[in-house]
Length: 403
Image: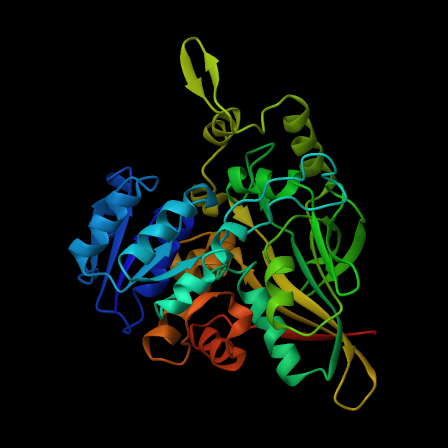
């Protein structure tokens, strides 16, 4: 397998650290607009299977040309979702398998944004499903940790733990702290703003998709392995779109443990218009306010040495167990930042995301996962994925809760 990775920020760099230990691929090329970033990744003495390239992720023709030049079998999109349409189209053009960790962006309903969805996450990709199926090509979308591993947990629960599922409730929280910064997000602030300030999406069998106001329906969720109780709120996320396509259930939700301080910062950015993506003129220079915010904050990939604590991603599934009794099970994955830095040199949040596309690539390489069309992780058998994740040294956990 020859893999072309587009984007070498925190997650792209962590993909390299994880993949370096595995033998399933022949060559992995890392490409970025800034040539210094992929060059830094491939500079180590043991990286003989790695190569660096320069490419503009917004240029479909350039991506396709690079994929052909490298003889790529797979394109892994490790950029933010603004560039999904171009990379997705380039993969189809070059007949490459496509993977991403976040789907194409949504657009709120023009008149009723807090009750009705407009363009939903991934709509632009799912519109192409028939074309990918007709060509026998696979686009595996949303294969990070959330979405990604959280969807695998839903598949595992459906296949092994429940005879009937009431709700698939993805819950994400952490007790991570960053020393020396009053405010320092541990993941891309560009993507975080997009997720958190858009109207959250909920799916119910009887109602279909609907939206609420940002940060709605707060609940205190008890996270495992010492993280403890954290208030979680509704946030827009891909699992709500993906899971109902494959999993028979009555409701799907996503809530994120942001914390009151983080929420207030996001609200202030929105109030000031600093979450905007349309360029404004600043002394004759056109610049998007959100890009300024991202540039002013520390790069999350560089914070590992200042971070401590754990991050948890998981899926709480409620319904009826095989014995006919009510059941509630939280399937989860915890990464301790100290372990992540020691083992891979990457901070916990980006490593937790990067592990999953590499696991998926290995399953695709050996044929364990196969198919055609635009599909999410919940469309594939979960057991091989979870077994391989444990082999990578980062097993999942399972916590029975009171129904």
